[in-house]
Image 1 (tube, helix red, strand yellow):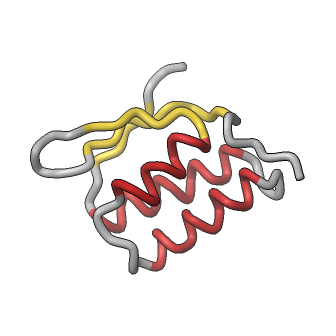
Image 2 (cartoon, one colour):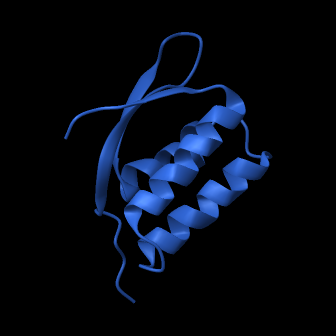
Length: 87
């Protein structure tokens, strides 16, 4: 099975917590790490949708940009500030 972990999308700058810890997410690999290791809450509906979308994008079932949209919705759900960055 071909994995697309290094598939890139328009970068997103994310502020992960009140301590101003930030992350720039450019690839599915970086996003998967963020969702699994750094996400502040794993019980939101948009979070679950984003995790599924990440798996689907890695498997090539959806495009990285479709996943990116799900990630932004999940960020909004938990109050993570997210903004687009130029490539």
